[in-house]
Length: 145
Image 1: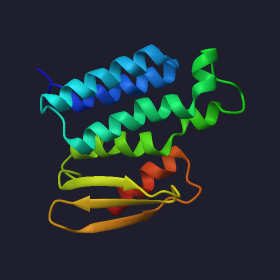
Image 2: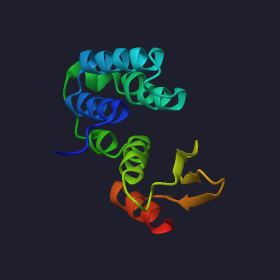
Image 3: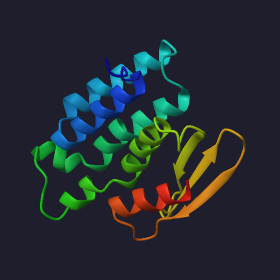
């Protein structure tokens, strides 16, 4: 029998699906689940912020697409290559591996050109992701491990 999915893993998966579906209702439902999970102590404050970013922030920055219910040609790539979402998902994926088991946090700076990887022993590593595509971000972060 496989490893059960964590509450955070499930919320990240649902938020990603809601974004790809451009469904405001699913985004709000996922946010509500995250709010309840936080109140019950099933996820941390930082994890709640990550889900809030993937839901509420996404709704605020993609209002037109959500209203239309479809991706327009000019913003299709922006929706598919959300650096914050990539970092959040990558962090959870890496933490499930031996190579990433000591990762405590991965954060994207405001300019979205650097990722700071913090480890549970106090070390940090900074990764330059200037002009990186989604797959290049993953390769660059994995390379520092």
